[in-house]
Image (cartoon, rainbow, N blue to C red):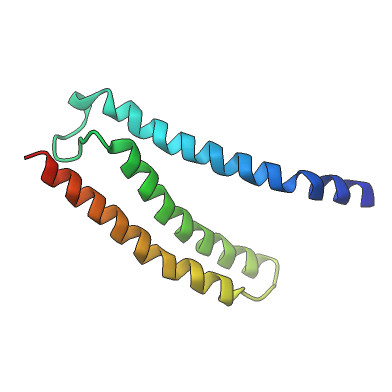
Length: 112
């Protein structure tokens, strides 16, 4: 059993980095798919920076889902919430949404 714990600890950082990179590429590629098909999207939503908007929206929902999953796992495993960590995540959500909104407004202003 100890051998497995050592093996998992050894590969944990590379796997976390790989997961972050793959999710980033996934969100950008979703935006790129809609970027090459402007007729499939309402003109109000189509913009050349659509992959960036997909990525920025994924950041805010990722933070919210982390808080949600943490609260579910704390209930399921009968452990206390790590409030000091969740407060920092919750404080970052409005910042991420403001950045998204500013980029979206800027993109809408450049179309005119």
